[in-house]
Image 1: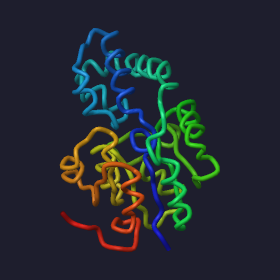
Image 2 (image 1 turned 135 degrees about the horizontal axis):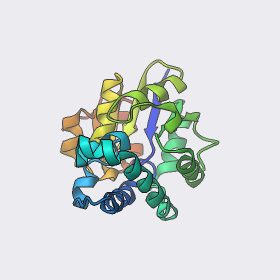
Image 3 (image 1 turned 90 degrees about the horizontal axis):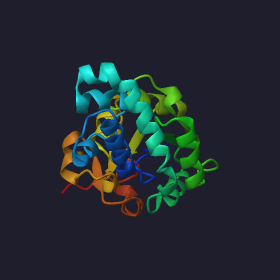
Length: 223
């Protein structure tokens, strides 16, 4: 049997990372903290429960974390209509299904955001299942999301496809290998250093070379 495919949504299938960076920038600024957007981007992929203290410190997170997270959610929703699927996203899911993989979409997004992504990708009839914020207690880089997706996939062997170092770390902590794409704005060297088994520039490139990855039947090509 082929391994299950656990597919990250934000930054991997839908182009959201920079929208989130802008929303976080505005949310922090509303609460008196001005951070460089590039620095915020380096933490996109983390869940908000961990991103706020990582960027602004534990004390700020204790006093203002809930308000900042609520502000980011509202600010991001104001941008969500600008979000588009990444090139080849739906085709990639279709290829995986045609090859016999169970496909679970892994997201810690709230239901409204998740519904928007599923509609954008017309993925409800393709994917076998998906996760949402209701399925996790601790967000990435904690392994909860990957473990929840693995359970929905029926357990057994699985491979994660993600776009950030946080995806790779969460999967590693769940005992799952990761294939990474660079669509989230992280460099190949960073993703490999985090532990990605293979890195590709885009989903179309990954689709073409799938047999060179842990989702295929051939060994991964080493540089």
